[in-house]
Image (cartoon, rainbow, N blue to C red; front, side, top):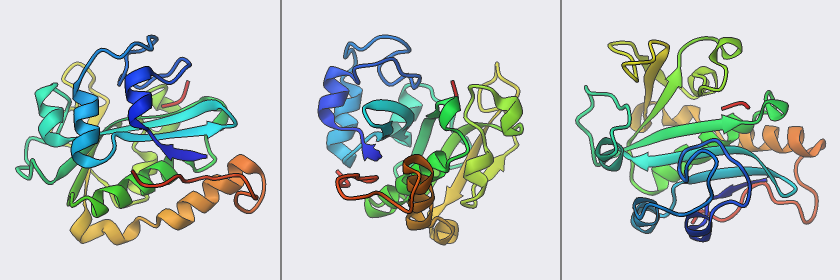
Length: 209
């Protein structure tokens, strides 16, 4: 099931190893007050996908005004700082790849951004094919929603394969169909047409290893 990351999880950790650097690579201790601040300001910081109790995927987003403060790669051409959300990390365990989980998480993030007044979404990705991107966030699931690569420069100067991709929600947001993406992910994870009674793929709105 796919659920928003809660404030309690921000403060107390996720209870297992994870990839996205929100809490550090292998540590569960809460160390930074930025994340609860973002949560309180915009209503969330991302999503987790679980198979039973096991975390199998993560997506972390951060408003661009905060992304620049912590030196995340963003598009230098975009001046819409306050209206832009940045997906800083998207990671799916290798055994769960190809089930539409990444697409479902992206779709839900786009819906979140629309609901909370963001008009543009950027993401830090690897522009190479998925089989070559390794643990990096692949551009592949983003392009299905109309994201475009900014090829004017590398996302990270020390990683020539990295790029920033972006989507203007006012122009291309209609391509993101969260319902279809979530239904496909549900079928792939649960092995049937959507969650049965007691199985919830999406809770309330509040890379591959």
